[in-house]
Amino acid sequence: MTAEIIDGKKIAEKVREEVRQGVAKMKEETGYVPGLATVRVGEDPASATYVRMKQRMCETLGINSFGHTFPEDATQEEVETLVSELNANPSVNGILVQLPLPGHLDEEAILNSIDLAKDVDGFHPVNIGRLAMKGRDPLFIPCTPYGCIRLLEESGVQISGAEAVIVGRSNIVGLPVAMLLQKANATVTICHSRTKDLAEHTRNADIVIAAIGRREMITGDMLKPGAAVIDVGINQKEDASRKRGYRLVGDVDFESAKEVAGKITPVPGGVGPMTIAMLMANTLRAAQIAQDEN
Ligand code: GUN
Image 1 (cartoon, rainbow, N blue to C red):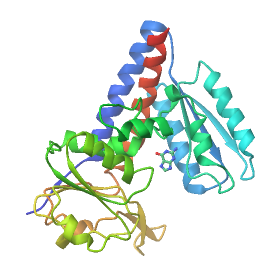
Image 2 (image 1 turned 45 degrees about the vertical axis):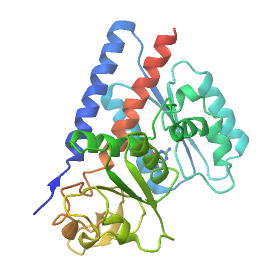
Image 3 (image 1 turned 90 degrees about the horizontal axis):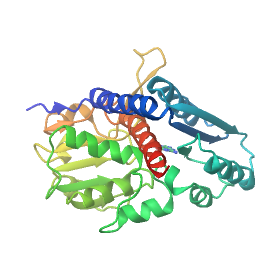
Image 4 (image 1 turned 180 degrees about the vertical axis):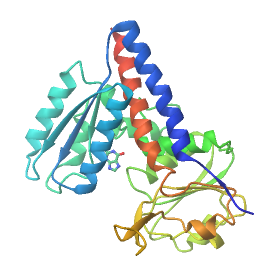
């Protein structure tokens, strides 16, 4: 059996089209254009690329984008002062502080300084707290976990009652995706680098979310036949046939996994395109909340 490929590019385009239409409708009815501010500190090349992609996508969908870049040695006060200004700026609906921040900055304090109603990344401690609690809902759901859930839903995967295993416990993906799956009534197990027998857990899982950051670590023999596999990993693998000398692979060994899984996301073209699409959806939602308050 070969797994059905979950086409992240196609599903992301569907989300983007929803956002495009929502933005156009808002502009037509109220004259207001949603806006996203990005804040980046330092010169990490991957972060610079991600932020540029986010800004470009704003332009493509008709959302205003406001880019702010600090040098590596920016102070806590400088960053928090900018966030306060953006909080007060009515043209800005969403504020995205690209992570990771340089080590000398207090990440939690900076995320805490973002207005809850503009927390389109969903990383504000209050939003994360609400995500964790029964009967409460965050204003915004973190973009990559939100994208994982949307991929499962669009592919017809039953979440309620499913055994879900998350491999990885990062604040950005593993932890929030576990909380989301639990909210959607899955039975959730979080595995990590200290888990004694990872395969024992993954072999029981109807849904596997791989977000551990170790290249091709989850192999086909670790999966339950028919499982839905969402691969969040992006790793480089040497490949002399490519001009740049490498290709991108996930945390799942795609070749062996696709022979066992029922549905699987490829890398690239799976989760990747969803993260930015969900950020755009969150930004539109932030603008709609702001408009409703007026
Ligand atoms: N770094 C890696 N992923 C993300 C993300 O989704 N948002 C932000 N702000 N930083 C990140």
